Length: 292
Image (cartoon, rainbow, N blue to C red; front, side):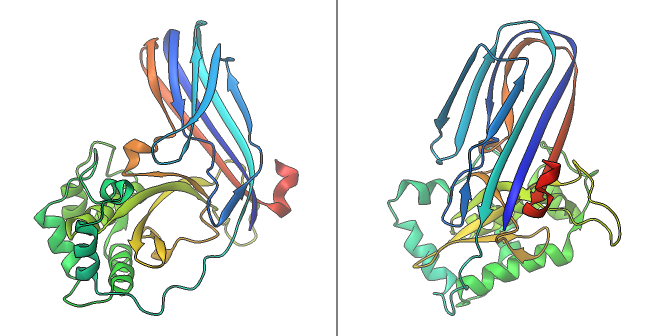
């Protein structure tokens, strides 16, 4: 699939900001199944300092600093990219218990990062018990992971009014409701609680308009899903919000241990008072490029 991505983050402050240092993870990364063209970046007001680096997960991180007084911050990124279909899922996979035991002795740094606790995800017996309804003894890992993905899709309600960033996973699990970020965290916590490796993926999902209705600019959404490690195959990306394997219609932005590692924009500032946040996302197929 060929897309043009447009992502705008806009802050309105109730009081002047005199100094601002920010990090943005809004530049899509290149992957085995995704190639990115050059991004067009617009920051207003114009920063006095701007630089790009890679974080420990390989994500592109934009640092910028502003020293002039302002009461709005507008960051817009437009990126052309191409996504490719995933290969077929493995026809067989080892039992999940054997993979968990293998990972326990795996010395690779990234594998251990994705097995252990992280800022928003703590392994516990409650999550392990939830996972064990799918991870029955001897079940192949791929089958069990797909079953967990489907279980969350079938038994949880998408409810954007229920959770915030501070809502613990125990409440999400108890009330069976949340948003894509919660469902990704829940699946990751469940997988880690039975000894497996899982990472959080941020990206985008094209929103299809109702039949006969025009496509609305700004109506698409940021999205979140997860990927779990399958030996001899790679990272299997799963979207529990939609009950699917995440593929070419899931453009990837960044990945990490959980949302804390991939927040689109964060930083420190002097002043500002209260703020209002607006986010606009467009995932435009190539045929819609005239709208870019």
